[in-house]
Length: 330
Ligand SMILES: COc1ccc(CNC(=O)c2ccc3nccnc3c2)cc1
Image (cartoon, rainbow, N blue to C red):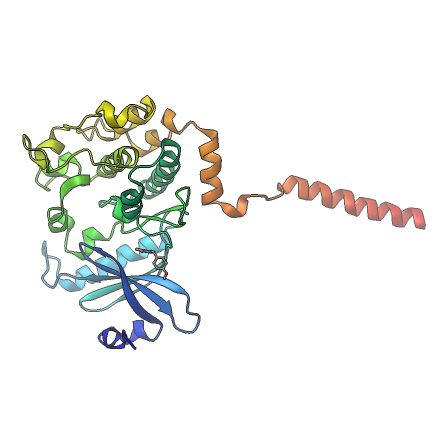
């Protein structure tokens, strides 16, 4: 078939279980292909990550592979409704194949482009799920390091849908330290401290919070806070100096609280930047209607459940009732 030749140079371990077909997305360190499980025909996404051949920072390829597998083991253990599930990982000499649950709605990046910007209630519902996912990662002492709309997936075609964060934690292990990856893309979402220290700074969780701020800015306005179109100042300088603003033309009907949260996330000094725990407590999220919707999306099985106390009460009443009627009959 069309793909058989491409499936030829894939490892037997993979092709005996999956048929890989079209490309779904391309990242800096590989591509994502649509995969069908043989037999069940269940759909998956297979991320194909090429490992750098040379060893960086003294870790020989072997140790890198074991590091990668160690990292993957941690990621496989993660369990959160807004964090993508890893089905399995097939590690070969040069390439890593990560079989992931397939997310039908595609990337947030494409959705933002198509809707231009989200209404504030929709942006809040989507962003609250992202913050919940990153809080879960940070609580496990995992830093995502590469948060951007391309790594945020949407489960449904409508905008009020479940969000899945993907592509976390791996970057620092697969391409031999994310330094190269960090400086090969446009730094749109990159925290200033990474640019200020030219990458020699310590990667802390705070870098994720900065990236979340940039994402929220884009969700609400439809355009990025920093851009290389500016003539007077180049992109790194705009980021390091925190030179962004909220022109009335785009921000006039956005709430003060949303803008306040963006400012707290996009604080250039990482020590002064809001933490994820404080972000999830921010007044902008004090919105029961949004929280109810978010919880229904994240924990659908909880919805419509009869509270256990009621089940017990019903059971007791029924068994007593039955018991009594038997006694009366006697
Ligand atoms: C034919 O079935 C399909 C249905 C929906 C889509 C849209 N999804 C995607 O394009 C997509 C992209 C990257 C991903 N990364 C990890 C997990 N899932 C992903 C899904 C792609 C294929």
